[in-house]
Length: 298
Image (cartoon, rainbow, N blue to C red; front, side, top):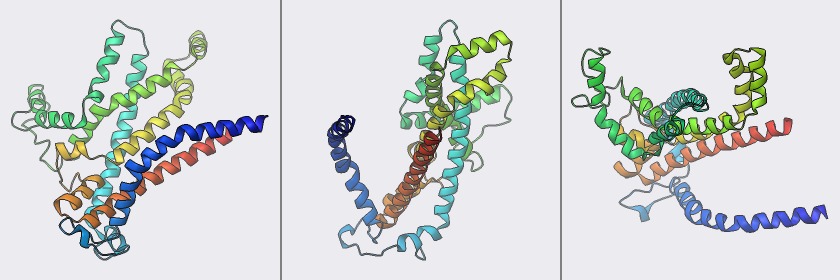
């Protein structure tokens, strides 16, 4: 009886999953396979039908990705951007979530207001911040000059030394609410008995956080970090609208777009897109496997 019930559940699960799998195959699998195929050719945007098979030359050839300094610069920029933004957003999101768990007047309004940056479309946010960071009429320079933090206007989106700082700050402003929302959801599920016992014993709140709260919300925080890291690795729209295709802030996605559109090298750009896909897929697989190992050990 148990085996029959298990088989029925499996069939029912596949019955519900089949429509979604068909849709994914139509809208995702075919474009992905087409991109992988083009990455193995010398396809050009002007002569797409006359492409020739080049195998792995776009990857390992003399002029391939693995020998391209600009590509490796884009890889470093992407990893550095991911490390900075995810770290800062995790810390700030946790702090904001801890504040929002407290009871105070207007808490519901504050919770709604915190989500506004995340709700604004990324392109709109990038364009808005490009105006605010303008060195001539931007409000950011005006405020910093008034409080005496800078001696003169800063070219936030033009100075090579400030480009990555500007991009990171804008992304942190936009995406921190996402991290705060996930951490807040985890905090809402914690048992109150632990905190009541700690309060009776007179344990310091900081010690309670590191000894009780953090271990309990660690699984939810790790999920949030992984999802945010995968999204940061694929970053394109925010940097492209705010900065453009500058090498100092070029990410792997922007590099692939530049090869595909600006240089019209469809084969080479498809190879870059494919490599980015496999990097994200590899990180996802590693996360799933690590999660299974932890669940198995528990």
